[in-house]
Amino acid sequence: AIDINNLRSESGYITLDSGYKNTGATESAITFLDGEEGILRYRGYPIEQLAEESSFIEVAYLLIYGSLPTQEQLDSFTNEIKIHTLVNEDMRKILDGFPSAAHPMGILSALVSSLTAFYPESLNPNQKKEELDLSIVRLMAKMPTIAAWSYKNSIGHPVNYPKNKLDYCSNFLHMMFAYPTEDYQIDPVVVKALNKLLILHADHEQNCSTSTVRLVGSANASLYSSVSAGISALWGPLHGGANQAVIEMLEQIKADGGDSKKFIAKAKDKDDPFRLMGFGHRVYKNFDPRATIIKKAADEVLTALGVKDPILDIAKELEEAALTDQYFVDRKLYPNVDFYSGIIYRALGIPTDMFTVMFALGRLPGWISQWKEMREQKEPIGRPRQVYVGEKERNYVQMNGR
Ligand code: ACO
Image (cartoon, rainbow, N blue to C red):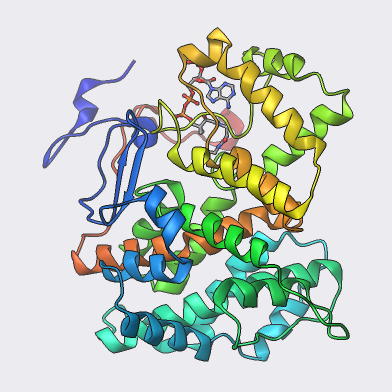
């Protein structure tokens, strides 16, 4: 039982809202999301239009600076990013310290945090506009390099340096897949799909990792350390880690004989910890507009690349079975963005344990813009209260009396 007296503080009543289901943490002008209607807009622009018309870098500019860039602004932002794609050679020593079995998300978080060591000026919470812009482009530029290097580390291959004549997505693919000894042809279908996936993941208002970035930043922690914390939050399988978990689940169903109904029954069984990964969302209770776009893109990409993936058939069966099942209908559980993103990443040749890293690459401009907004709004340090339900005061007991 909760003691009502505990709910009062000097400044009024304390609301208890476990998981912050109905608690707004901030005012924000970045992303609009209507979970009942399935609407998602960045700075007012519908996600469907941005995914179709825009490039990831253009969307990053939009999120971070508030409006679509002119050609000149876009060229300048793109060029600034290209100038900074190299990471300090000493970062390779840190990378070398990781065993090849290290999960790339752990490496990503550590190396992003280590940027503070190479750019100590980024630790100043009151950086002037030009200084902050430089910190931002550095992070946008180096994140794909770090991400691709974390993969190279996991397979024991030498790293590839960035090729700055390539666009953002092509350069990342080059660093991931090119061998130093061979030509690597970048497929435009893959580049287009990657752009779309990154755009769809670019921001999602106050989700777990973004709230983490804002909360850590509210203590005047630097952009790099705040984003590093966000990467750790994203890693969790209930959040960004779900895209990896979806593929592992589909593999498990396939290995078990492919009976999706059996796994639906498991997901409904409250004594079984199994959940249908890629289903359900805290905010979307109708459909996830990103999932609609991704499902279509998955079909297109697999057709264009001539990939036949039995996992996709299982995914479709699972989706159909779940959508007509009363348990899922009653709880408004629909496929979310991660249900299909893993299938596309697989078709693009991205290994499963890199899926959440891909999510982080996409979410980066969102984290940056939310951190920047938090600073510009001069938000106070985030410090939730609690309702104490522990022991009342009691006296210390000597060891021989316990
Ligand atoms: N499979 C089976 N049952 C589910 C699932 C699922 N995937 N998701 C929710 N439920 C059930 C819960 O057991 C609960 O049932 P009950 O009312 O009988 O107790 C009910 O639906 C409500 O679920 P909650 O967990 O209370 O909803 P919440 O908003 O806290 O959680 C979450 C949302 C974490 C996304 C959840 O749906 C889930 O675990 N999904 C699977 C993981 C996943 O796909 N995460 C990615 C989310 S998208 C993203 O972060 C990019």
